[in-house]
Image (cartoon, rainbow, N blue to C red; front, side, top):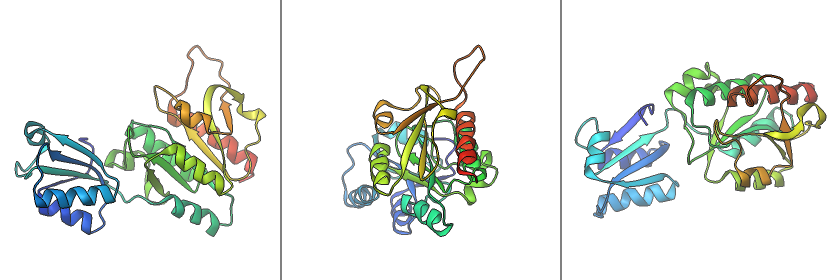
Length: 246
């Protein structure tokens, strides 16, 4: 949490942040507080599907910088999120079949930034990340992206599996990185495609993997059994680039 750029404290500032369209990543509210202003804030949080934590006063005091939090602290995204529709529109405007990165619970901001950078250089039209158990668009992510965050749309979704199902209706098919998959050189990776990369420790989750059409492995000859998530994303992305003739 320390890496989030904007910390908004107090009832009026938080409410105004919602009303101004600011993207709120997470909201901390004093447990048991149910007065009118808090209820209004909670309705806004529900409307925007914000992650919500009811916590003790001690926890709020620990998070607070002003010590005048009035029972509520919001953490806002450092950069504005796009929508999945924005990403599809970008592909349409460029006259290209969609090429999208979908990241399953990437928690390291350096990895996320590096993947956004790779997505930009590989010609991908955007990146999709989940709202839960994943890092958001923080200052460290922006720095690691080397500026790519300004050019590559990043969408944040409630459920990655449902997003995959919806994108399949748009003609996309999906390949996920998996050590036990088919060697990437033996797969047809052309056309409208979503590249799914799993978390640093657990890889792609079971449900997400079950909804992918293919699993791709990266040939390895060394003594360890896996690549860093951002490196794996780069290797697979450029096999897609090679096959698409980009």
